[in-house]
Image (cartoon, rainbow, N blue to C red; front, side, top):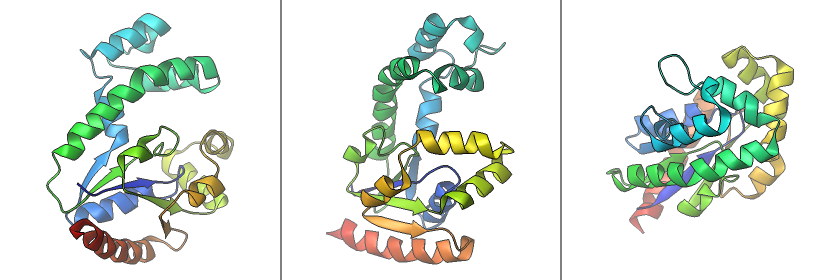
Length: 198
C-alpha cells in the first residue's frame, strides 16, 4: 500500500486538504481519530491514565476530560513523556489497522504529529500543508475561539515550520485559500496515483 503522510502546523488547513483527498475517493486515516479510539471508556489506556493522573481526568460519564489532561501535560515535559510512551504505540497500532483495511489506490495518514511522533516511518512520502505563522494564528483563533497567545504556545510546542518544510517531499501552499488548495491537491492526487501504480 502506497501511503502519504499529510501534516502541517495548527491552523494550516490540514483537515481541508484531507477533505479534498477524501472527495477524490482516497481513504484518509486521521491520527487524531486513532488517538481518541485508544482512550475510549473500557480501553485499558484510559484506566492507566486515570490511575496515573487521578480520577478527576474523567468526566461524569467516564470519558476522558481531554482539556483537563492537556492542561496537566502541556507544561510538564515528564508527564507528557509518560503519556506519550503509553499512547504512541497504541495509536500506531490503530493507524496501521485502519491503513491495512484501506481499499483506495493509495492512502493518506493525516497527522499533526507525523514527524514528531515518528509516524513518518509508516509512509512513503510526506506532504506538508504550509501557511505563514501569522495566518496560522488568525485561522486557528477564528476556528477555535482561542486567544492568539494560546495558539502561539501551541505553535512553539510543534516542530518549527522550517524543519517541517525541510522534511517534506511535497508542499501544499495554503496561503491562497480553498480553491487554490483544491487545485494543488488535484495535481498531487494525479502524481500519487502514478507513484502508487509503480
